Image 1: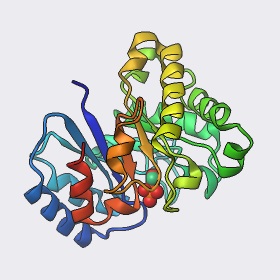
Image 2: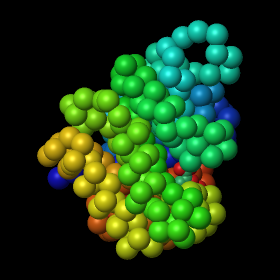
Image 3: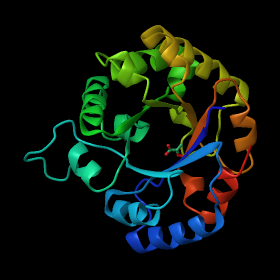
Length: 250
Ligand code: PEP
């Protein structure tokens, strides 16, 4: 049975002390379940705390929210893949909509970050998703397919098969609006087809997460949608009780 993935994106929240308290509550109350993995994406300053909190738990994993495409150098303010890996990260988010639309990250830059992630031994979660005006113009699948192809360009199928994809419609992130399970399913099915086109049968095993205002009330319906293998959650992952309810769902 394929494992479901529950990924918490804490964005620019949770200081180290808050992260430590959160992880104490979480690890005390959440017992390992064979059918799921839980991923945490804290801010870089809280990564160490999370890594320490999960060191005895193979079902819990940590990652960073972004990396630079270079391994080292004079890039003030940036974190590289090797630095993140050495600090205990196993995963990295690439191309989150806030990186794309707040910080102007391009498709070409996401591609370089995916390469850097694999080079550093990090599993990239490539985030794709359309803006509201793109959805309204009927361009959802065009945009998502373009971001997917660009982000994974030039990566060998064996490596790609270990990546994760997150479909996050931009209009649903942090807005309280979610795609309906049917709308999410249509996009997830298209992503699955594209992944199979890129890497053959292996494309069937790449987890595709849904993200965008997921909470304890809507998570079951979204996880039941076609080709939804898990969720990437921002706001609702900041509260330990709500996060516990989400990861216990379905
Ligand atoms: C996200 O940050 O990836 C996200 C989906 O945020 P939210 O759950 O708050 O919409």
